[in-house]
Image (cartoon, one colour):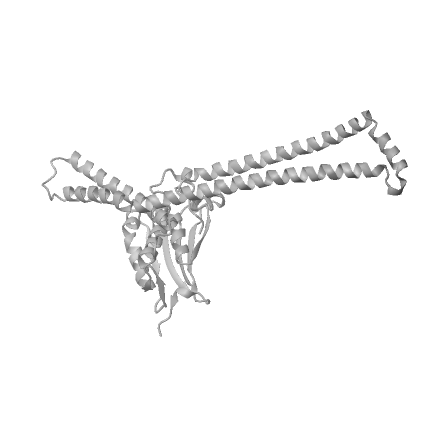
Length: 346
């Protein structure tokens, strides 16, 4: 898979750089054309001033056996200019190609170093956050004694919630970086699809209840098993279900279904009756830290890394997913696992 970039602003910067390079190249071509034209005019003027063409006629008359005419000098001059121009353009192209290759290698090395650094920071970043979350939970539960007043209790809740939010963000960033650094290894085993769907839906059930959203699960009965990393597969569908619930208004509906296609592929769908996504936002939502249509409903809780992580995890499984959505009609995310991951009991 292509390397992911955790700072989408750099993408626009690279596009601007590409446009700038194209403009500079066009300017250089214009300058080269001007040079050729000026050279031709200069050669003509110099030739007339020094009577070069008259001398050429004398030379031709004195050497008639060479069968030379007036066109020869023009053809030779044009050939010399074209050869010079071609060599000059080739040197410029080689220089630009060398520079582009050097910049590409530098960018790749920096991206690798970033991914390696973040992948190796897992323990150092998660450990203190787990301690903050654990101690705040213990204090809220009164393990060290009852909290003296309501203000302190509110502060503890804020610390606990902020710790969880930051830990989720760090987990997503570290997961993506670990995949980029090619250090993520799938722990594969056979997965019962209906059980996996039940686990995923129960993990987001509280979110649906808070918004009075109906969460329905249509799991296939007696379906073949799925070969994959169950923890990562559940993570994909928790992200998709959470997004569906987050962008569905109160009283809406979220559907989670699965089926086996004729080609043997496992296909799962997460559909909602939410606000939908405009066509122009469908591509940008796969970028890290991007959330489509925030201007329509205000800021949404989340990091914007969910779909990016889902894409990476599905590619590790050899699968993919597609999004079909329109504003005001809801969204359907279709996840497809390849047929070779379908395990049929003997």
